Structures are given as structure tokens and as C-alpha cells.
Length: 125
Image (cartoon, rainbow, N blue to C red; front, side):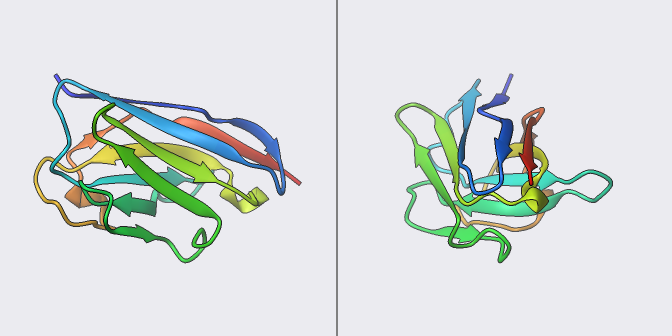
């Protein structure tokens, strides 16, 4: 059974940084794309970032581009999201996601078959 478990969330002041990690078990995702999504309070889930299986291509939502970076370690079966210059509007539950098939990055949640339970990120002003 495939499991994705996020960690690293917490409370941080505006301007601060957090590093989220996603540990994957049950299968290897060395040949599929991975992504991060978030759901702010009272809003729909939205795309944050995605990365190809080999880490060669990444994509970011305009709202986080230049502040967030995504990385993938196939040997450790983990995906990380480094978040810098955090803003109160970054407050959300952050979810890790994996595609069952497909090496390309995607901004659509429907492209991802496996999801973690999420980790809360709260940015205070």
C-alpha cells in the first residue's frame, strides 16, 4: 500500500522559513512526477509546486515562485518543499502528491493518484 507522509509544518512568523518533507513508502516513485498542493482556510485546494522524476523540470505557482523550491531524492524516496519569505497568505494545509503514471509535471490535482494527509503551515503577521 502506498503511503505519503508529510512533516515539517508548524507556526512561523512572516518572513521566516520552513522545510516540508514527504516520505513515500509502498513503491518507488523514481519515474513519476511529484507535487505539492495546499488548501488555505475556507478555500479550494491549489497547486503549489511540482517536479519531474529526475528533478530536471519543476513548476511553481506564481504566488510562490522565487520563494519556494522543490527537490526530489529518489534514493531516499522523499520530496521536499523549501519555503522562504513566508507570508500570512501562505497559511494552509500542505499536501504531498504523487502521480501513478506520468513523468511530466502537472498543476492539476486530478493528475495525482496518491496523497498524503497534509501538514499545517501557519504564518503569523
